[in-house]
Image (cartoon, rainbow, N blue to C red; front, side, top):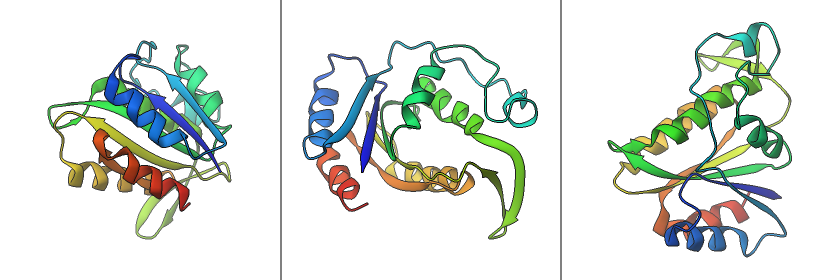
Length: 171
């Protein structure tokens, strides 16, 4: 099992450092990317990734560095700040842009439209810092991963990194 930790918090944030240590200390194949200063543009909704280029986003920014690493790992944990009770804008851009992994074909399954994409399933989890509603974030992550046929690992406050680490080890 492999894990990619995408840190959207400042590199020297003590909570992030502690959480990363907790997430990676029991894993042989774990990689950490500090992406807080990456230039990740907002999705423009052009649908080029779905209709023209089969999974490749037309925006050329630092997101491409992240995409390459995601495909090397089975599970992804994102460390995020919160804003207005939800994930901050930079983290939301990361998740929005991930839809470029999906290709243009869709199917109706389980009373929902699902993207038919690469036969690869990822596990996604989130550790957030600040004030946010874990229940709403877990519901959002479940809807998000259902739409992309991935596995929700869970959403936890950053001080519960140990709990999320246990969930990862059970996958």
